[in-house]
Image 1 (cartoon, rainbow, N blue to C red):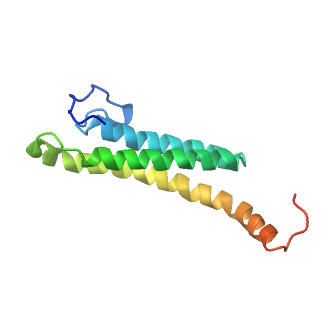
Image 2: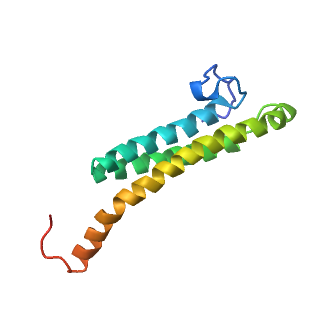
Image 3: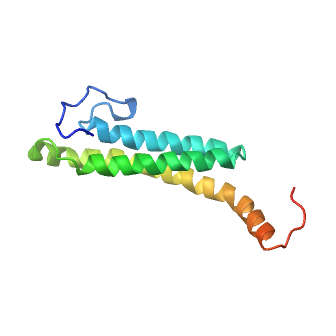
Length: 127
């Protein structure tokens, strides 16, 4: 991110029409949500290499989100007036991400147990 602050882009995702949330921050939340949906699809297909790859992308996006959220905001009065709606939007996105994460973990449990068994020598053959 550059040190000089550019004016916000007119980007307004469909999920956020009508709110005044910082579009850059919202775009990070939405990108993380999309990555979690892609991770879930890969997990359902048993493509664990893709899950790991997408998890790395999520880590990078989260890091970028944290950095962007620390940048100086616009007008403090305007920001406080928007904070409640922004919190609701972020909360809905985060809830969907957590639901996806829970299902990914559920799908990964048998695979992780097989890996544990194999590494512990409890299983002689892989299926």
